Structures are given as structure tokens and as C-alpha cells.
Length: 142
Image (cartoon, rainbow, N blue to C red; front, top):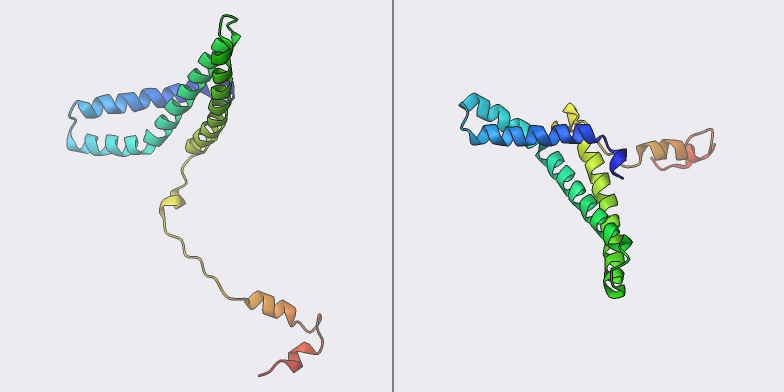
């Protein structure tokens, strides 16, 4: 599953995250602090998703190595197989979460939206259209 995601770009995000944290720890000027804090807020969720995904991938690799070892006892092998199924399921969820986190942000996401809902106006026009129901309009009460 790891090769499907752009590993070099994920590494770049993690490096930038670490760089921002290091610069914030160094007590920058107020304007730089605000800019870094905003950038950190924008990539913090992505960096956490990458770290979670990679942690689960490493755990899956460790379990697969344990299962590949012929010296592993039967009871331990059974536990490892059960754990590996759970880790793989979680890994699929984390991969999807990571893909969503990597989607570019839309400027309109931060703005408010107005949704107007009208009760049945289009349905009423269609239902009582003279072409569909020739006598319905005259039969409707005023």
C-alpha cells in the first residue's frame, strides 16, 4: 500500500512540519511566529495522518515478518494473524484518511453558504401541469 502514495511528497511534508516546529521553538519575531503558526495549523493534520499511516505500515511489516519466521510458535502465530487482520483493516482506513487530508484546500471551504429549501414547489408544478393532467388545474381549489 505504501508505493501507491507519493512517498517523496509525504517526506517533504514531514520535513516541513519538523522545520516549522523547530523554528517556532526558536522564538521568532511576532510576524514570523504568526505566519509559521498558520502554516503549522494547515499541515498538522496531514503530518499526523502520515505518521499514523506509517506507524501502522511498520507494525504490519513486523507482524508479517513474525509470521514468515518458521520458529514462531503456533499460539503466537494465531495471535499475530488476528492482529495482522486488524492492522490491515486499520491501514486501509488510515490510507483513505491520508488521501482525504492530502486533498488541496478550497478557498470556498472557509466561507459561509446559504442553502434555500422550498417545500415542493417544483413537484407541484410538475404534478399539476396541464400537459400531464388536463383537468387537474381547474379542479384545484382556489
